Image 1 (spheres, rainbow, N blue to C red):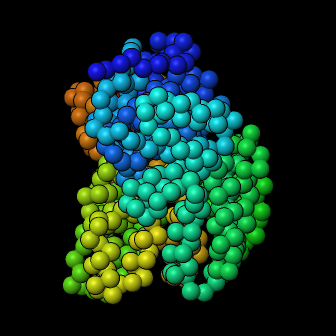
Image 2 (image 1 turned 120 degrees about the vertical axis):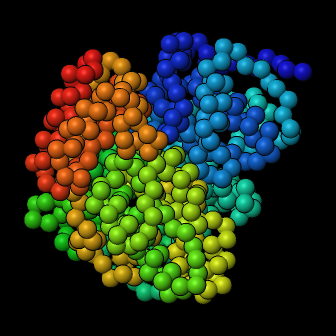
Length: 510
């Protein structure tokens, strides 16, 4: 029989605030002072979900690259990735319900692992989630301070039986990937790698990798979390990429390689600084570097037939897509903006590679792939794929994969940048009253509605060579319409961007 559940912290959230919060790609995310009630409900929901599936699940408390006053909850499903669309809808309905009841579940036991980042609000929110899990009749296990990919991998690993008791072996994540890396890298990698930890949890855990890999990889940490109150301030991948600035505490040496993580260590950019110019390696180039090596290895065994795909968004530079399809001969598939869409699309291939421009990405492979690589004696490629975090995009693990490849292919950062030349691009946004009237195709590469607006956009673009393109889409988080234009010549790209924005201003209420 259903019974009424305790509903703690409900009085702390006004109804309009409750209705505004949605479970998106980043989970629930908001100013931390509004999140106690959300955390309580998330704990109950995930506890019941674990009892209903008889599988271990997780909750990560983080707001990634957001300001330190924010926080959030990201639910980790059994496979470590992201919730299905139906599950996202269910948790949102559950959270917004006026009353909740305790329903019968298929199993008596449930286990949920709860991780958190270094934000000052994370510890108290963790306790609230654990209380909610307990209210649901499940067991909550506090992982402590971990990265988002680490939390996801540990949930994934326990459900696969790779590890039995997480709480007794917190270093399993580090040991597992370091052991694979040490099998791949036979000799010491030349040079020094500087890693900017965004003053977050990634900087803390990099130390463990640094100690275990000291004989093969020289790592120096900056912004490694000793000043957690300065999380993401003047440092981290979001700052470097968006502001086009060097992180604070930057150590210059022309022989160094540089990488920056974001606040919860799932995004990554590489860069170098020369002649007072900052050159940044973004997501497309990681995908191409990984694909180059995989394709090179598979060519050694022409009888081995594996499907390979690179998943991109409409924001991927067209020059990268051209290189992928024409030079590498690999299928490039577009997916909607948002890492959850790329992650799902990657599963359509035997080996799927996805990266957002912000450096969030991974290699996903099907179960049979490793056995086939072993059968065809492609042992190095087998190890390389094993090194990829199958649960979710992981900045720290992607650093290890990148360092192996740069060493293997005898490339430096400059060589990497010279693989292809990006087209000039402009991304702008226009604040509007009703963004919902803008409809695109599934991949968000083409405007579909309003039809008369589409006709006017097509008329503008017909005046330019087909190597130029523009994408218009409504933002998922703001009351804005986003415009992305690109092509071979920067002045023409600027003209396209101006004309499209002027058209939108005259067409829409702003």
